[in-house]
Length: 128
Image (tube, rainbow, N blue to C red; front, side):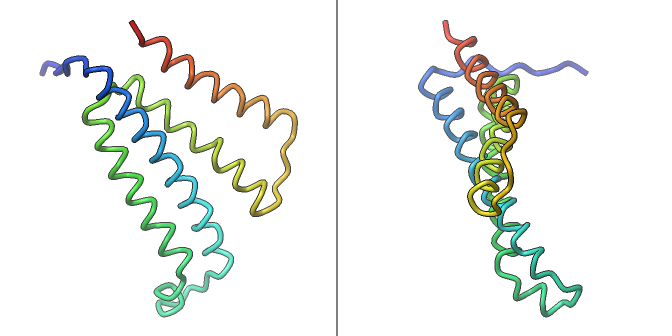
């Protein structure tokens, strides 16, 4: 079985895929926040599950994230697109800080800076 290669996309198309994936990570982060919020109201009862709007909205956003991710991965370079998903950690940490009052230790901040620097380097490293 041979691996198929996709032609290098036009720079504008490549940029569009990067922005699509980055936007998808925002949806992923929002989904995770909503799922956590919904779990605060969780009861193992079918009616309670069907009326748990934050939980339903979170799973819906996560489904939309998955769809956008698949579309971006279909057209984009896997080695560039997939690391962008790590931005979800950055958004979740920031949202958790503001919404749930989670703590931000210096080590977390260094980790976030590392993730952002890594994604930026990957994006710049592919330019010709």
